[in-house]
Image (cartoon, rainbow, N blue to C red; front, side, top):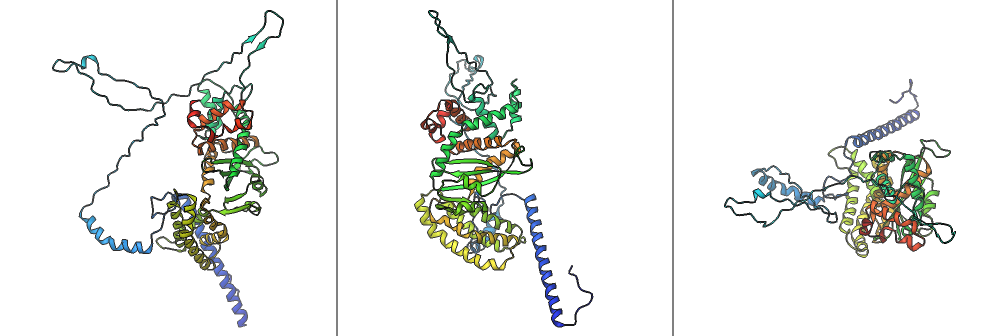
Length: 519
C-alpha cells in the first residue's frame, strides 16, 4: 500500500510531483507482484508438471517439435466437420498392441537343451513308432552370478647343482598395481560398477562380502586412484585427438569434496567436461577443479584452436578472445528460456513466447531433416532455409525487446537471446558446426546420475580419479565399446606398454569390441 501524506500541498506542481511518484511506486509494485507470480507459477510447474520441454503439437519429435502454420490450421479446421461426421458413424476403442519381442543378441553364447518325447509316448494309436519330422525352437536368457576365484602365481626357482651360482626365479608378468590382490578383471569390474553403473564403493564391498571376500572400501578407493594414475597416458593421447577436430563442446557441473585442504566440506567444487573429436573417433574428457574461475578453461583448453560451443557462462570469455577461437552459443539454452516464459503465460492464450518458439522449432526441424546429409549439403540448406528464419527472428527480437520488462520470464528470455545473438547464428557458417551444446550436456549426464548415488568425493585425489575413469568409460562407450570388456583388455596389456605405439593400440577406436570381449 502506498503511503499518503496527511496533508497534501496546495501547490499544483508539488501535487503533480506526488502523483507521479505514487504512480511510479504503484507500477514498480505491480511489476514486482507480476515477477513473483511468475516465479511461483514456474516453481509449481517444476514441482508438479512433467520435466520435458517437448512441444505438445508433435509427439514424434525427439526434442523440438514444429508448430503448425496458420494455413495448416485453417485447412485442419475446414476438414474437421467431414471427419467428425465420419467418426460419428462408428467409434472403436483403441486396441493396445503388444510390442514385438526383440531377439537376444546373436553374439551371446548358446547352450542347446534338447527335449524329446518319452519312449512310451512315441507309439502311435495304430501301433507304429512316431518319427522326428521337425522341431520348434525358443530361447531364454540365463545369467550366471559373479564368479570369484583366486589366481595363484607359482614362480619356479632354478639352481645349478654343478656349481654354486645363485638361484634364479622365474619372472612374474608385470601387474598394473604391484603387490596387490587386484587382478585386471577385479579392477575392470570395480571401475565399471562405480562409474558405468553408479554403484558406490560400499555397495561393491558388500557384493564381495557375499562371496566371502572382505576388502575394505578404503582399499577399493586406493585401487581406483592407482588405476587412474596408471591410465593417464591414454588420457593424454585422447586429449590430443580431442584437439585435432575444429569443434569442441564444453560444460561443467557441481561436485562436493569433503576433505579439500583449506576449504569447508560444504564448499562447491566443479567437474568439467569436454566433448568432441573426429566423428569416427569421439572423445569425452572430464576434469576436476576446485574453482570455476576463468583460469580453469584457459588451462583446460590451452593449445586448442577452433570453434568452442558453450553455454552463457562468463568464465569462457577469456578463452573466446584468444586468437583462433570462435565461440558458439547454444540454441537449446535460448529455447529453454522461452519454454519457461511459455509456462507462466495464461492458459489457453498464445503469447510472444509462442512466436519465438515457433521460429526456433522450425530451425530445429531443418536440422532434423539434415541429420543424415554431409557437411557441404547441410551448409547449403542452412543458408537457403535457416537464414531467412534467423532474419525473421531477429526482426521480431528487435521489435519485442523494448516492449518487455527485463525481470519477467519473457524479458529474461528475450535479453538472453539478444545478448548471445552473434554467437547463436554462427552455426550456419559451416555444415560441421552444431546448433546446440546437447553433446556436452549428454556427455556429463552419466556423472550427474552417478553423483546422486555416491553424493560426494572424499578427497581431491578421489575426485581426480573419478574424472579420469569417467573419461575412459564414456569415451569407450561413445566408440561402441562395452566398458568392462575394454577396461579389462587395456588393464591386462597396459603394464607391458613401453612406446607411444603400444598405448595408441589400446585406445578405444583401435581396439575392436570383439577382441576386447574375447579377452
